[in-house]
Length: 120
Length: 120
Length: 120
Length: 120
Image (cartoon, rainbow over all chains, first blue to last red; front, side, top):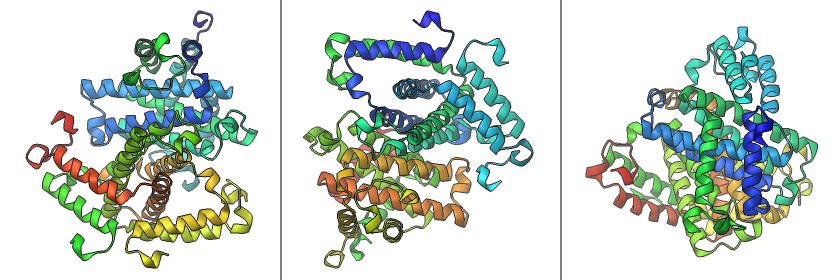
């Protein structure tokens, strides 16, 4: 199936569907549970960085980088699976959100500022 | 740039690079900060589901579904940006992790069980 | 000092101060880092519950209950430490917040409804 | 009820029981849901700090400090409520965990190092 598509996310979605079906795990994959699993993995991602300075986080040693890669993979897999269960196309939603952000954070007002758009 | 690639995630990565550069936000986008932002959005995603039953989460009303779509988009955008800052290809990492999972959760042992592989 | 107080949280605060001072860990305990550590532990707490039904979560087996106890302890320790670093009294803040909640969720409007106060 | 106890956490637990009973919210307060709510609030706590440097997080302006106080209160309230639903005493669990940590991180090995005990 993946061969018919040119999108990484569509390919992951199809692989996950097969993986889950073979193991009869659909019963556990309610959107509620998948949102929890995604948030759990994002907590593990935090643990990679929590005692590092920002500067250190820009230059991870190989072990920390591998740990970050693992957690990024886990978050992405649950995100793709959650979106699939909700019938959402995550890349399309992200492109839509970027257009929103371009409107909410006009270049001339937002440049160099880490403020929420409601405070610009 | 997006036109040169056939991957949704590559396209998002390039859009984000331009968005950040125009606003001079690279200074805020340390991997540490991006991991926090990703986890913050995953917390907002939880809030969509926290008082719903699993069954309700499988049949969201339009307002909750739109909220979930927004948070999924935010998580994906920060994930793509974080991976870019670490020089990682998130889809490749996810495919690698799926192969790991296929080994760790063999079909005959994992079928119908929501257990960690260390307990199978 | 703990002996001079009748509050569990004051006692934990003092124990944590001594623990951190002995190990020279104050340098790592910026509020930013402590907030990350707290959120990381709350992610581990999620992992105890993510594949359980709500009903199962009300009747944990001893192993899951012990895991939940561990994560609750970790969250509380980081919370006490974070509040200390910010000069906040967490119990006083919680009591203040309860008064807010009593106003925002009047009994007659909120009874039996899991809605945000802005939607009541 | 609070007057009969000398513990902040016991007092909060009793107030929460009354608050929930009056609103008939016990039906929503499964441990699973409370763990999600706690993690959601810890995500909001992250958002207070995510674009600040560590140094800035040590010197919050009044608005950010008030936001942090609010989220700390929310996390503590859900933590107390979750522990109550599981029949756990969170302060006792935290004291037990501190003893574990004192063993796992001996002063002479852990001083000045932000490493996990398994790596000391």
